[in-house]
Image (spheres, rainbow, N blue to C red):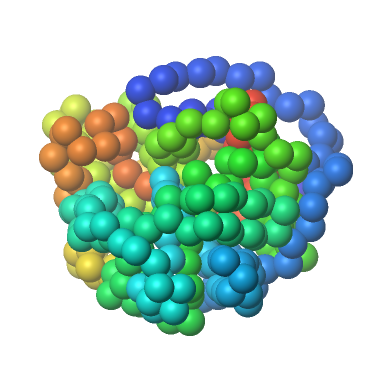
Length: 282
C-alpha cells in the first residue's frame, strides 16, 4: 500500500522542517483507542462529555482552530456567553464564546475550556445530530493522533507537555500547483480540496484545468469545481478535483491558500504527529 508523508506546520507565521519517521513506526503503540462513526463517508464523529452531559456527538476537525458546541448544548448547560466572530472559509460569521468547566473526549480532557458556540446546522448541511466540533486546541493536547477509517477507531497518543501548549493556529501543509508551492490547512472536516482562487492568481500560480468546470454550493460557500492538473501532493504529481472559491481579504488568514480536505485523498488511515510536525496517510 502506498504511504504518503508531508511535513506540516502547526501555527501561522512559523516554519519548521522535521525529519520523517522511520517506515513501520506506529502511532498505535501505547495509544488510547476510541471508536468513531463515519458520517456521510467523511465526517469522523466520536462521543464526548461536557460538564457531566454525556453521549454528545463531536466531529473531529483539524481544520478548526477552536473547538465548538452547538447552541442547543450551551442552552442546556446554561452557559454564559459573549459575542464574537470567526473566519469560516471565506467570510466572517457571528459566533459566541463560552467557558465550560470540563470537557472529555476519550483520553483528552480540559478544564475551564474556552469554546465557540455556533448554530451548527445553519452553516453545514452535515451537522444534523452533531453536538460539537473538536478542533486543534484540544486535539493537540495529544502528541499524536491516528484515524483508522477501516477499523473506525481513533488512536490518541501520550499527552503533550502542558508548558508547550499555545494557540494552535492552523495545521498547514505544502502542496505544489503548477510548479509553485502553496499552503493549505489540513482539514479532516471537509470532503473537498478548497483553493482560494483570487490569492493564487494574484501570485501568478498557474491553474491548468481539464474538462468543463461546474458551479457548486457547499453549505454557504459558492465555488467552481474543476479538474486541476499538475498538482503534487507528497511528491506525487496528479490531476485532482478541487473547488475554487474566493478567499478572504489578505489580512485574514495570511499565508493560507485554502483547505486540504483529507477525505478527498480517500485514505484508509491518517497519522498526525503533532509533536514532530509530520502527516502521513495510506
